[in-house]
Image (tube, rainbow, N blue to C red):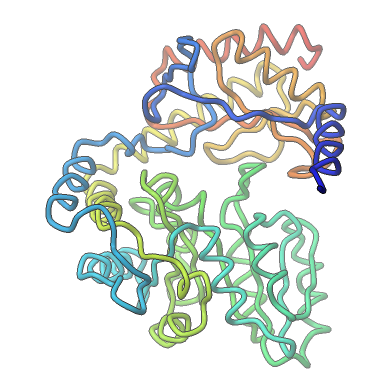
Length: 392
């Protein structure tokens, strides 16, 4: 009988290269301080819970009330019996929030990119993608038979060159992250939009790490740059700053209707639980009612990044609450992350193939929940461990 000898060999290679990463089990829910399974309390600096909404009283109340009213599941896919009135309300509210004609909600940001890209791209089209776009964009493109062009990260000269030579395709779609998840930098969206308009291309922005973070009340990168009506497709997440789970595409009514008939990740996945939809509706209310959460997030992030840079850490191109500390070699990066954990900080190591081989980093994410004392503790530990590793 065949076994898993090949897989075992690959696992051994991951361990030998320092790229093996076992799952960490936590007691309790997401918070600024969390308890490991062995009882140790550590400062959480790897969570996408940017605004601390996972435990917000209004969101918890909305979820509990929805379970009482609807039960725990939707019962089916959206195109059969799974579209409940609460899903419809969420999509209408998201469209109002994003300033678009319509939105369509998926089960995650990953499945949103898979469903949208695989539906709109064909063999007569070309997709033009930033080299550092998220894995869900890459995988969504791989599901198509479209033509692919990659431009160097945020390199507008290369983007224009590709646009110039791709005029014969039926559709040209420029795809970019709004905030790049491994480096924490922001896409030059105004320049992308201007080039796309000049060369008659569509613009597609994945705002996973911009949702709830950039723009007024966290409306995203399109709002941040004042580009309403000029970005054709905005993908967002409900799984990070919004505090729950899910993804959505904010776009035109005609594209929404098309996707409900063609997006396989929408057509063949059960609808979000009603409690999740209710949670997300409550989260939109909180974003608009409590702008101080976003203000605190940015104050924390900007202050902490400046302090790390003053200490001598290489934070790459970070300009958001995502703050990498570049370490380099994969094994050394993971050892650095482990030492931080021993000293009371969870800062996950990110290594090849997620990032370039020589650009391993621990990725810090500052949240609105972090206090001044939390961040001072983190800075002290980072300086101590950074000195041990010769990074400073």
